[in-house]
Amino acid sequence: MNSLLIGYVIGGLMLVSIAYFTINVSYDSADDVLLANTKIALGDISELIEFDLRKIGYTKFGLTGASAIIYADSVKIQFETDLENDGISNRITWHYDKSQPVPSTINPNDFTLYRTDYTYPALVKTDSVGMPTSVTMFEFSYYDVDNVLIPTPVADLDLIKTIEIKLMFESTEPINNTYQKIVWEKQINPRNLNH
Image 1 (cartoon, rainbow, N blue to C red):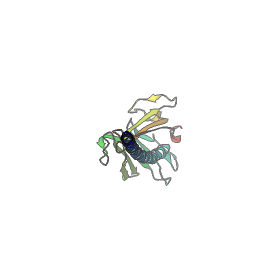
Image 2: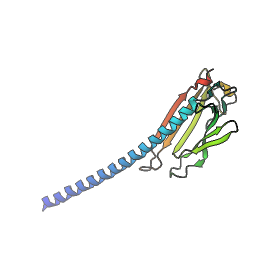
Image 3: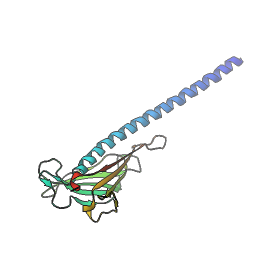
Image 4: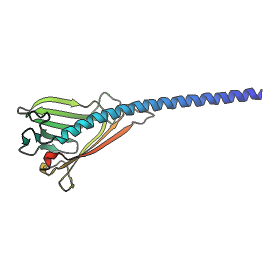
C-alpha cells in the first residue's frame, strides 16, 4: 500500500511539473512573438526616420537656400528636403504626440508618432501617417559642430550638425504584467548640414 501511495505522490508531482513547464513554454512563446513583432515595427520605423534625416537639406540642384531645418525640439523636427530626387521639395515633420494614446493597443504607455509630408510649392499635404505601433519614447537631441548639446527648442537652427534619436517601443500587450521593451538610439550627421 505504501508503494502505491508513493507512486501516486510521484505521479502527481510529475503532472504538476509538466503543467508548470507547459505554462512557462506558453508564456515564453507569447513573449517571443510579441518581441518579434515589436522588433519588426522598430526596424521599419527606424529605417524611415534614418532615411528622412540623412536627406535633410538635400535638393536635386544642391543645398537649400535657407536653413534646411524649420523647427527642432525634443519631440518634433520639421525640415526641407527632396525625398524622391525629382526636383520637388518636401517639408517633412516627425512629431511624437504625447496627448494622443494609440487607440489600437492596450499599452497605456504608448502614444502616437506622426510623420507628415508636405510637397512644395503649395505645401500640399501628400502624406500624414500615425505610426500604428507602441512607441513609448521618442526624443531628439541636437549637437553643434563641436558636439555640444544644444538646448531645445533650438533657437538658432543653423547650429545643428548632428541629430540624435532615441526611440523606445514596448509590446502591445503585457506578458506576466510586463511589456517587452526595445530601445533604438542613433546619431545622424546629415551631409547637407555640415557645409
